Image (tube, rainbow over all chains, first blue to last red; front, side, top):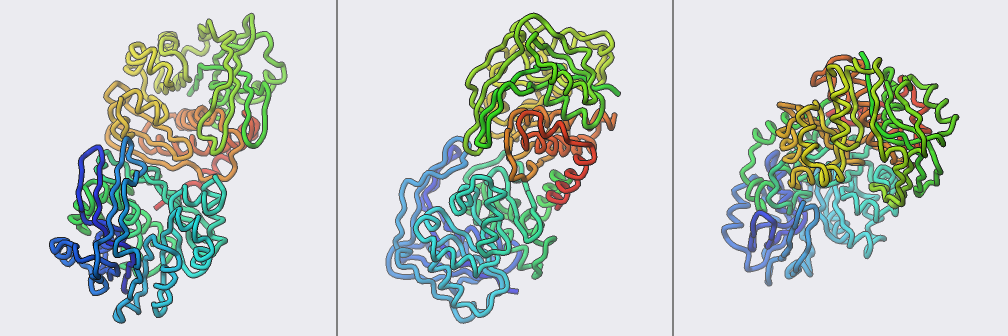
Length: 299
Length: 299
């Protein structure tokens, strides 16, 4: 069993009603890897610049994360600067510096090519496809996407959808991709575009898993502690894929539990700035919260 | 076992993306009663005017509804004229004519005074309290409220909260009542205002039940058929109270199932204009949908 993530590594600057973080460790691949490594070893592929702090490298290395695909190149690390207000449902981007990501061509190390479980974090569908072509024969591929690609790269995205097992996206993106405002209809329409499974995330309102013959609807973990929502979606994906990879079997029961672990890991993620909280989350802690959560949703 | 509802009976005019209804049978007490009568007999108290169509009286009488508290008075029936757009999450009120409701003083018939289960539909807290004072010794009282009373009648509302077992309200109203944007915190704060239980409705995103020592989180029934959301909240309350009254025992297990029946009855309600769809819903149909729903939410 082996789990690979390809995505961004970032230095985030975040403002929320609960405080401010400057140049904190972030990026889709980081939130995913910190979350998934609670369940199993994670192979990380992503670019950093010469300015990437040594202490962050250390923090990553301390986790069960294989960093042999973390490439340091000339230039500065990708930076995102954003702000959340009120209920913190939506991030307002203040500034983005692509820096080394501008010419991101992920190089998959040879020893990663046999990866069975793969998360293609949000990136251009052309690049996501390039990653897939570099892998031998993955067993289960989850891809994320966003508004930008749905609008600007629809054709490559549609091609990618034929090659992945699961597409994960939020409800607004599912509406945009299908031109359908009803989320249940939208999910089914996306299944018809290729992926056997679709996961629609609704933030504080939970998520929906569309499988070939059934739907699983899950609320979010009810929490009164939201400090910084950045990376919640990627931590969610990390919980999903971490659990599936650890179980090493894709079936309905495991996928439902995977969604629940995704929910639980996202709930840890938002309790601290960046990866501060999820960094400390142990497997036992995740299991305990899963048990609590199960008690809150079981009929 | 006896179930009483006191609330409005209306002639609604509704526009949705799926069509238009003019002077259709509506009102909080009607949606509640049609829903709850799927489970048990419902005692209905509400005012109608001289213009109330005979065919609507017949429609009500055909259900398991005791209409001896439906009082016809001089004047016109309460009218609401509204519109839904897009995702239909919020009603836009075009016009309201209080008519006979302007001087609504519900008279509880003597044979209703021993009612054990009571739904105080959305109305002024002063009037809701007056109803309670007219009852002998109800076992379980559920009260609804809205923005208007939270803003304009806070003092009587706070008094009422000490006298009811459950307050049901939507998430926006819970934020307004507590001045707290986190729904989980808000629910707990409302429990501290008096009611042992609080139900927060989140429309298409489900509902949350706050009990003394636990929380139950429930998604909405995933449906791609939404024709007219009018009365969904009251049908929800009807499913909750109908099931609890039928079970005739208030405990955690029953309340969770009651919330699920509320969800199921709301999902029927929105499939047709006014009460057209819920009018046809049988107890077996509700049970079948509950079973389907259970399959969609069980871990």
